[in-house]
Length: 399
Image 1 (cartoon, rainbow, N blue to C red):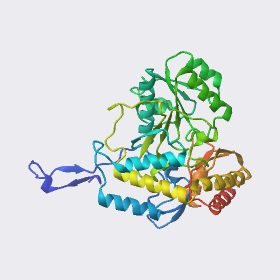
Image 2 (image 1 turned 90 degrees about the vertical axis):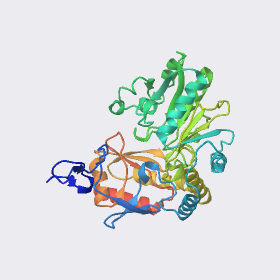
Image 3 (image 1 turned 45 degrees about the horizontal axis):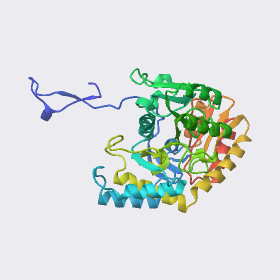
Image 4 (image 1 turned 180 degrees about the vertical axis):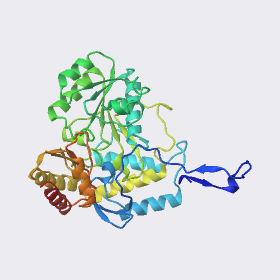
C-alpha cells in the first residue's frame, strides 16, 4: 500500500467496500531545504529537533533583529494576543499611530506618513502603485541584480527572469547598471518613468552598493523630472547597516521607503514611509491584515529594544570588526556590504562551505546570486565572539 494513502470508513461516501482512499496534503515543493528542523531560539542561538545548538548568523534572511525570543518581545506579543489579536482597518487602532510615531522618531523621518501592510513584497507593490498614482506614469527603473519580491510589480522589477511569470512580464520596467547616472538620465528624459527603485544595499544580488556620488545624483535627477525615488530598505533597514536606513549614509531623502523583515523581529509586517508632498485619498491603498494589533505590538517592542539596547551602534561596531577580520582570512577575496549586512566572497564556490558550516560547525549563513559569496545577516545583538567563531570555522574549512 502507498504510504501517502490511508482508508477511513467514517469518511467513506459509498461503494461496495464502504471505504474511500484519502491522500495526505503535501507542501508545494518550491524551497530547497537543509535536512534540519529548527524548533527553538534564544538570542543568536537556535536548536534543532535533535537538540543540536547552532549559531544563527543569518537571522532568517535578516528578519531577526533583536535576537530570538527576547523577553520584552515575548511579553509584549503575549499580552497583546490575550487582549486582541486583530480587528479591521475600519476602526481606530491606536497601536498603529504609536508605531508610526516611534518609527518616525527613531529613524528621523517624523514628517513622513506610514502605511502598513504584511510583507516586503507587499510594501514594494504599494510603493510602486503609489508612485504611479502620484505621477500618472507607468514605467519603473530598477537596477541590474536587483531583488524586490516575488509578486506582480515587485517581481517584475526584480532582475531574475527565472521567477518572472508571463503575467508579471507586462509591467513596464527598464534595468540599468548600478552607479551609471548617464543611463538614468537617458531613461528619465523619456518622460514616462513613475519611479526609480533601488535597494540600500543589494541583498540577494551580492551586496552591490551604490556610491555616495551616484545616490546624490540619482536624488537630484528624480527631483528634476518629477520621478519618485523608492528606497527598498526591506533588508538593509531597521539599523542593520549602522544607521536606521542604509540610504542615510548618503544624506538623501527618498520619496518612498519600503520596510519589512526586521521591523517586527519575525512577526509578518511591512510598510512604506511616504514623503509629505504625496497626498492620500480613501481607497488608493488598502489591506485586510496590515497594521493589525499583534503586528504593531511586535514592532513596537522590537523598536524599544533596538533603542534601549543601542543595537544600531552595536551593528556598526561588530560589523566593522567582522569585516576587517573576515577580510584577512585566507581564500577570502572580498568582504562587501556594511554593518551587519555583509557578503564574504571566496575564491571558490560557497555552497559546499555553507553546508559544512551548518552540519560540521553548526553555524547558519546565507547565499547570494554570486555563487562564491556567503551572506552574513545576524541578529543585531551579535557579539564579536560570535564573529570570532565564524572566522575560526572558515579558517578550518578553507584549508
